[in-house]
Length: 319
Image (cartoon, rainbow, N blue to C red):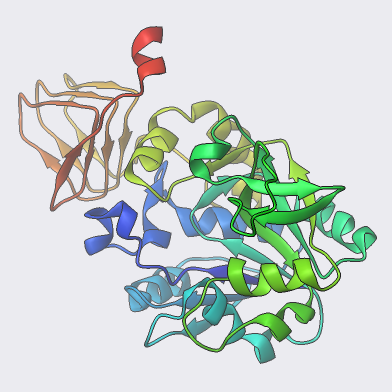
């Protein structure tokens, strides 16, 4: 089975970070988010991966080609003009062939069991199976309407009136049948392929109950770094076994003064933190320099910008 990884997006919700770095290479616990997806696929026995690229595409290609991802054959689908989640997939119809395939986003941190997802799909008799995740934030993120074990709607766009606490995780198993309903132009997969499957044989779902984090917004990205130690500890050993990389909060390539104070922060490679600094609840991307005596709280910093984050109310109450 092959996999198609969506990595061509502009990442506008992660600006200004994505002004200089493509979203799939934005690090979470010092590992590019795209590599968490590669880890899951390899762990599931997937070896053939097609990855579409557009925004800073050459940087993504260089990062992958320079990494030692043994056992994975990664093909790039370059989009000179961005095609969206629908058009980007349609462009690779011939590359994916005539078998079912995995579709997965490059901006999620999860431990979805792709083998279990495949088994659910094979038993469904449907043209596709989406991995869904239950969360009280579904109404804000975008709920999926389900009925009788099938996906029927997304955010009530089909006017079914179906509400739920499920969201789409960004991972699915799809049949080549989906290509009948897709466009070879800029388009979204939900209102073309997924809708087409719903109306022609059905779209099933698999409920994922483990780790799931979306890092597509600045707030979510910040929280994934400062609040996800338990999840990262869970992923660390199997990830190292699969691709030789492990999430870590402090890069061994950072220069940190012995008297600097670090609390719930992630420090990237090549960072320099001067004497007397206090860094709390912050993410420093590679190459950031913090002058001696500085205090950094609730921030995301890259070599070009600093973004101050608002701490969630529930976290303020707990502390």
